[in-house]
Amino acid sequence: MKTCFLIISTFLIGHFVSFAQRDKNRVIILTDIEADPDDTQSLVRLLLYANQIDIKGLIATTSCWQQNKIAPESIERVIRAYDKVQPNLLQHEVGFPEGETMISLIKNGLSVYGMKGVGDGKDSEGSEWIIKILEEKDDRPLWISVWGGVNTLAQSLYKIQKTNSKKEAKRLISKLRVYTISDQDDSGIWIRNNFPDLFYIVSPGDYYATATWTGINSYIKGIDNKTISNSWIAQNIQQDHGPLGAEYPDVAWGVEGDTPAFLSLIPNGLNQPEHPEWGGWGGRYAFYKPDFSKTKKGSSIVTLAPETRPIWTNTIDNYTPYLAKEYGRTVKMDTLTFNDNKATLWRWRADFQNDFAARMDWCLLPYEEANHPPVPVLTHPERLRVKSGEAFSLDAFRSTDPDGDNLSYLWFHYPEESSYKEKIDLGAENVHIVNLKAPVVEKKATLHFILKLADKGTPSLSRYKRVIVTVVPK
Image 1 (cartoon, one colour):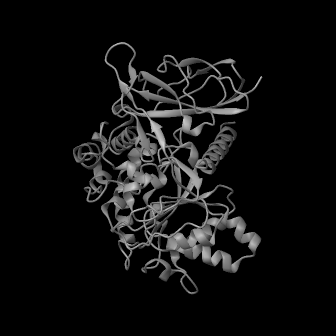
Image 2 (cartoon, rainbow, N blue to C red):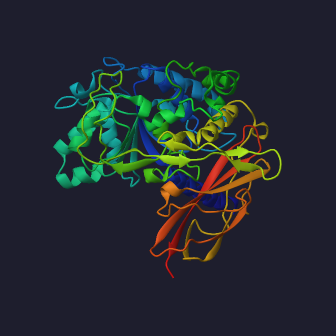
Image 3 (cartoon, rainbow, N blue to C red):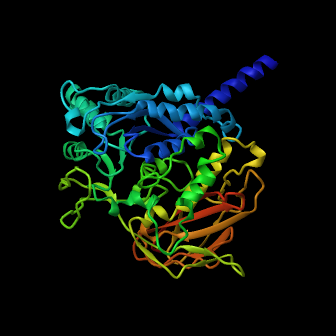
């Protein structure tokens, strides 16, 4: 009887693990590591989410900043440090892969710049690996998170198109999702021109000052920027956090400029990577063909070229932060409102930096001494349908915290994600339930409401629920 129970238990555990693995976002990283310390910084963070993101490859590449060499050994060095803390990470969450498994995913692109690495006879270990993963029997999209040049992917696409039928090439390419940190070689525009149906997120060109991804490290006047300060990084990431934290280098240009290319793959209840227009930790993007006639020239050698097709690119949030209030209701709206594309990303910065700091604590601390994220639970579906003018409620009463911490609730309407743009009065937005009245509409409208659930642990951690309400005329 015990043997039978053990067999059934083993089967069920394997089934659930398999299901959980299939449910993760798959990603291959292209990194010009050593061109800038920020690739190493981003890799440290990425490995702390290796149990929540299905990392399928780590490919060393070139870029406009490092044109003739690649540095796979630097990827391995960080993974060796991760391997030393992996047993402790497993005390906090399941599924962290062993270091040797991650090292087996390191692949090399060509040590040449841009389009010099694309064409007949230009295959590399990295480009072949992308094709191999694409051809696996896995229906999940394959994200390509590009931290440097993208010519390794360009070569994969070149070969796919040349060696497959049009139908099979289309099928394979339809599984790709690209998020690239601007254009860091001349193959990005080639890809977009030659593969017009490819899902592609980018702030094009080399004038990084206007790029959405720079919201991760931009100093914003009027808000608290401490979580990107050198002192915060030293205290919470680099020092006294074990061998992985010790590998996190000082900032040279901008901290973690590559991290936005995978932030939206983290399952936090807010991120929906298939919907860049909905926004998340990696920023929010709209689908259109941009006009660069007034765009300034930056410092790299990448030429800004006209786009021939729509892409997922910069869009604007009109964002007013909430501030902590000492007396009475615990939150209030700021008197400052920000209206730009970077706000779509930095509005979440304190949350994802605190999450990073907590996971760095997991590298050394036992479970009972560290903080873990709360678990938001709704008492109703995440999609609601109501009639024009009808009363309805949003309720997260069943939410819990694994450490027993007290919870704070914050509900808000996200108008940029909604078809209904007018202000919605939520009353007291910092309670588990908000009672609302649907706006009066003459045609169907959608409203996106976000719950931010935060604990009062150290550091404070946040998770989210997105409720999409469809309002129909009576």
